[in-house]
Image (cartoon, rainbow, N blue to C red; front, side, top):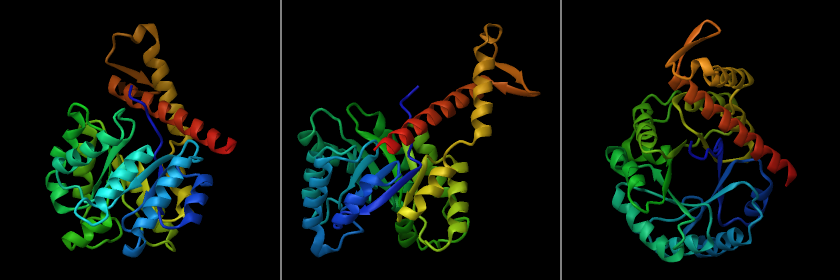
Length: 299
């Protein structure tokens, strides 16, 4: 089984804000996106780039996964952002406005020069109509030799802007796009996290959207404020009931008499071997979450 890493809460932090970059070292988010793009004004781009590179190089973020979101390569800041981000060696570089596999290949070529060992992953923002139309091709890039592509981040605000779709409760206009991206990610073995929820005063709405994203199959949710972390972490953590059931399913299939069976009966329910695989993944995820939280407590 592939390495499972919790990405329940993925928090954007403005790269131009030194205090935010420092505060992020103590927040209980699973992942951090140190942002050089939307969160930074044009006249602060170069200063933010230097500040983020320095913060990542200095470290101190513990077990938190750290991404740097760069500006697009067609902007005045994009090429220098990508050079600096790759050289700082974060866990990943997040590329905005990805619309084709060629966009990723171009970014990977730059990263290969700064990080020949291939330690820095490549992540793609899915936030344009072309990205949705080309989603299979973009995801398939993960299978190319030497590919760094490890995940998608949904950019629902930009999708709304580019398509005219309204952001409404339940996100009915966007569900087809969300599920297309999720299916492509799963088909090619990469992670995927949901877009942000904009209304910080609507705790109920945020919870409902987290629950919906979890039920769709997303790994977690991107966040715009630390106050959203606890809800996201709680929602994307398997419940005690789910963990107990997963443990029972794994144990039943591990019994010698069930070694050759494709389906067994567990507490009156017929359970297939594919359910055992799902159960095993739940247990691995829960173990990773427990280790993440233990590390956070220690730090």
